[in-house]
Image (cartoon, rainbow, N blue to C red; front, side, top):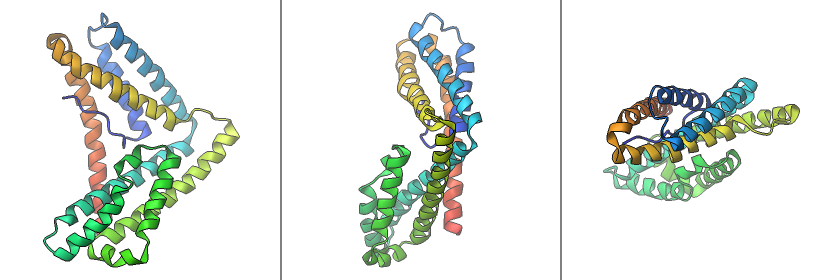
Length: 240
């Protein structure tokens, strides 16, 4: 099965992945598939635009990095609470269950929203966790207080970077940002190319199997890098 490219992939990683996918496509003999050719022509155009946008703005690249960090903290919080629900200590389990019910109101889906909406959701969730009657529960789950504080810092850092980026957009008259193009590339890769190749490698395995494996290898390599980054972030948050 060809995996989909993680939404936690950074802008620069999305760009390099799209370039690698295009290179893999050009090594194949699939010119007769006009639909696939059209998808890769569109992907190439967007990859070029993304490369231009990356080179244009350091401020936005920094913003994307800050977004990835806060996404990692949100994910880490989810799995910390999920794990603590199964803690053999009844008190810890009960506290984790209460805290996770708050997380579920927002869910991991918030990390796939626009920057503005995600900021609003994260800040609302942090306000919920700041309630006085939850502090005992937060203290009962090992590492929870530190992780919430880490998420608060990540969100504050994102807000600062977002302000700098807004000022640059206004000054330079930028209308299409790298983050917008990144989302378009993710859609092309995940909802079009991956879905299409999953189907065609079943319909005509002889023709598509080799390319499907190549695409799977490229995406899996990036996804593994994202997982390693998330694991490292989790370890740091626990140590701190």
